[in-house]
Image 1 (cartoon, helix red, strand yellow):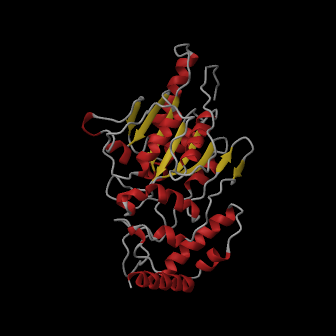
Image 2: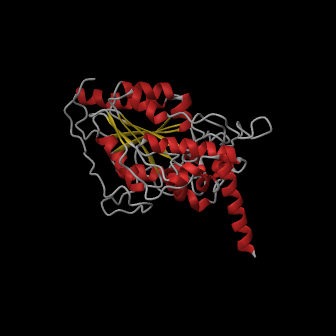
Image 3: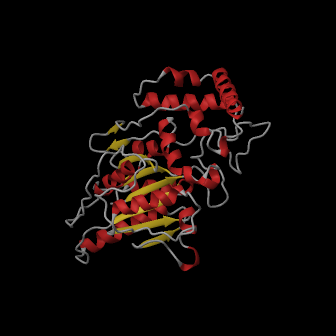
Length: 354
């Protein structure tokens, strides 16, 4: 694509990415592009991500929201929580609409009708749009390298329409489309689509990364890196859904940390200049997947063999990142050992009541 000389805002990188769940950072602007008063559920992971993302991007931002939770809950009754320009598009046209906005600014620059700075164009698509219905249009925007950041807020289901399974729903996750029963006791039989790696492999000229609301500074830094990258960028963010995951409302950030600590949601970056993955991010702890699963009602039906299957999946993710596995995690991938762990935990609970 043609390039144009225009003023560009370069966003500074914040402090240590492992600063944990602390949101406030003195380097952040005081403005709030995403304000309270919206109608999302209590503990909503996507709305937490929206605030972090928009605050990292700043006021020179245009937000685009295809149909999903964050469209329906944020724009009810002629009211929105955005202090920056925002536009809605259909669930399948996230990428094409975003490409159109970027192309319009490129055209105005070329014709001398816009002097800059070039806006931060951010599209926020749920995993239903990003991994299924709108995948082709997003791939097109990335392939053509439009100057934009496309974010998948990944709550691992179609939450807006009643908690249906998406291709990002994890193995064993119970949804209305993957209920457990005698024939399929685990619920969902398939593992989630490795969406971020698909984007990195298919669009190697783009900046691609994964993040979680459990690590706010890391998330906001990756937003800024994506916006600073000249061309298209893609970010996939773990955003727990209290209604669909069935957990205690205050635990959203806890889940955002634990899913990384147990290895089910690897955190990494794709460097488009060097064409390599960066696996340098490390959580402070490594946990068995059972500690993460037991906090959520959507996994309450799983048997020991299913938990062991998820543990093996997590172990494979750690190995992919070059992490040496402790014996406890290798041991936990055996179904018999999972049964022993469950029995020991139950005995401990009984002992606590005596």
